[in-house]
Image 1 (cartoon, rainbow, N blue to C red):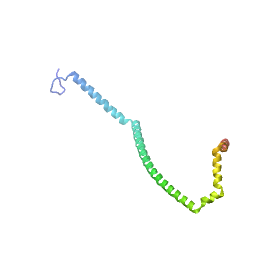
Image 2: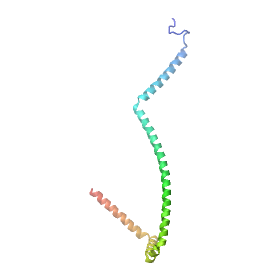
Image 3: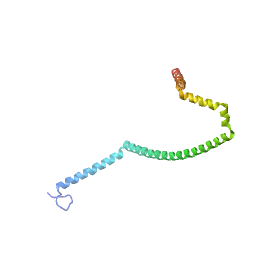
Image 4: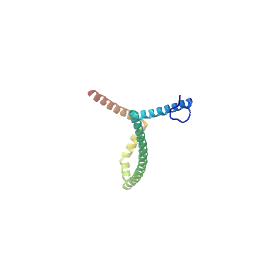
Length: 147
């Protein structure tokens, strides 16, 4: 028999042919996998969703950092304004003599006395607070049953 496959050389080696077939199959398998991946719309959509989520998270992280910086600056400016206003108000109170009038009227003494009494014996205050919470709870329960 003669070799009529168009090659000028002798018969190719069987091992070389098998290796060539093996490599061609591997390449064909990769090509089929690539085509299958492109055809899998669901998987591609999921990948796109994940990419979008990651981008959104990064943007939120950046925006949060910027907001925190601006908020910190605003808090600093507001604190300074409050300190200034407090100092000015304190000066005006001292100038007007209102503090002496409050001390003379006895209101300040009564407020300090009440504060001291609550600190010494907090049970009545706690009891009033608990009664208020219980009353609100009862009202909410009754309203809930009506509906």
